[in-house]
Amino acid sequence: MLRVLRMRADSDGPSGLDAMLQEVRAAAARDLAPLVRRIDEECLYPEAPLRSFAAAGAFATHLPVAGRADLGGAIRAAAEAGEHCLSTAFCMWCQGALAFAVACSDNAALRADLGPRLASGAVLGGIALANPLKTFAGLSRLSLAAERVAGGYRVSGSLPWVSNLGPGHRFAAVFERPAGRFAMTVLSCDAEGVQLVPPGRLLALGGTRTYTVKLQNVLVADEDLLADPIEAYFRRIRAGLLLLQAGMALGLGRACLQLMRDAAQPRSLVNGQLALQPRELADRLDALEEEACLLAATPFETDPVYWRRVLAVRLALGELAVEAAQNALMHCGSRGFVGDGEAQRRLREAAFLAVAAPALKHLRWMLAELQC
Image (cartoon, rainbow, N blue to C red; front, top):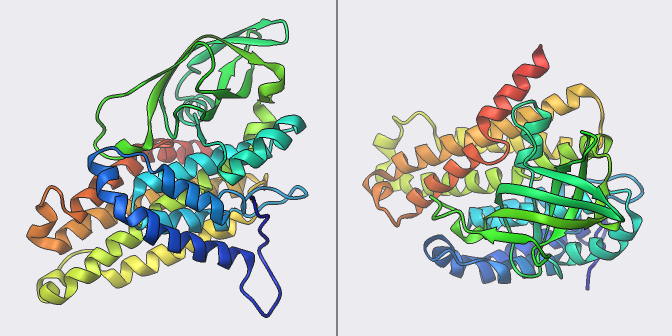
């Protein structure tokens, strides 16, 4: 059963947020940690851990109530998983982002029906974010186009990468309307005309059920639309979608910090010559977590300065995760060069954070455009 969590409880007990994080931490150690190698090497989809995190409330705590939301709990929950496995933390972002997008929609029927099922983990899914982000930044064109029909649209096109998908799963996508504006909908992976095509073996995150999604004349009913047109709605949710990604980078950064600390004792003299030391990494992670969670407390802020800060902290988190993984490998010495070792896995995972939507280069471009 879905539990509605609150940021504060009575003064004699832990807050609902603290209780949720304790349960997520326990579930990560119990249900996720034993599967990490299989997730990485066999592309095992971490469905059981995701269900456990859902039962703890990880996909409910960040949803808006009375027009307000705080995403800090969801960020910290994903970081707990990310300390063990970035694939699982990324799937958590997919799920949490889709739940957030539905909860922020003006479609009351969709919010009432699909919303609680996403928040409780009864329905899993993801969101196609890369294409609209690049389109609205002027870097690309939308991959999906539609024609108007009675009661909805017929949508066709191809989305290169969408994750956390499978039978019975849902995903959100943006398409171009005939008049040139845009709309956003939630689709079922089982819908007629939807085809999931494996993208080939990935460097990392093979367990995330990432597919190329091809749509051929797929019927999108008006009642399944999140927004039509999309412009005001997407501006409302974009900061939240990016901030929810912070948990991945924080979790990976903490894992690299632990690798560096574990390597310190046998190699303390020579490791002291490396550019990034554990104390500095810990301080930088703490500062970025504080900034991300501060921004996450007001995800619907409309001030352009706020949006610039969101982009900046997302960029800084991604860059620090990559730097931390590179340095963790060097701190581990020759053990860091072992192909199936922890440092190598973390380095491969960090490469994903460098190219995931929005990629670090796209964030840099978007920030530069805001300075113009």
